Length: 192
Image (tube, rainbow, N blue to C red; front, side, top):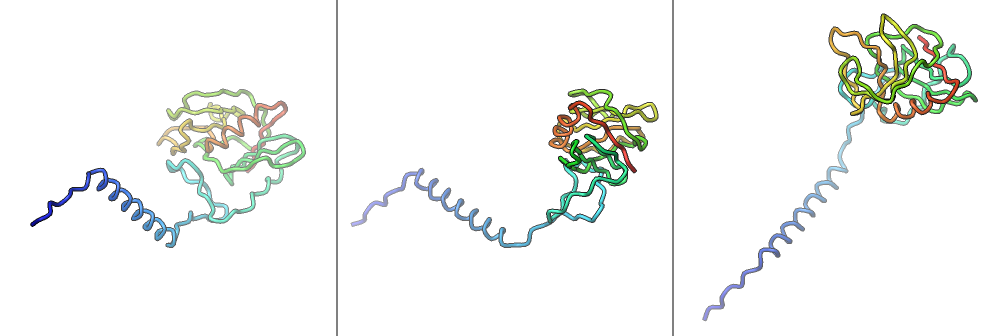
């Protein structure tokens, strides 16, 4: 006499296969975690690239922040180093509140101290990119020079053959610079 085979309900098969897949993925993830991890290349004094990367290159080790350049003045100010492509937010007590790399346009302001002439919450940049946290501080070659960040957080390369004067930064840094710049008596010091 033969005994009829019992069929297992399909939900048991689906549950079993799903559990096996989760265990398999977990095992592969644990194995991958044991392997080598890529690190971002970082050379001392390296300039941010003009790629579509949303952030400047990061160092694999926590580096000491660069010192505020000499000759940037005193008091509450935004210091912008053309050579280092970096900004420092310096408070009245000379404490650095934040420093970060930036992506300059094709037209840079002259060295000197500037008064913030205008702030604008959002607009379209001369390169067609939607930007926000715009802080105007200089004019050069008929263009207004301003700090800003792209709304989408990107750092597109300057348009080929087009003069641009925006100094772009990562989105989080743009928000902090905006808040810092809108406080009274904040100046911009541009140094080589």
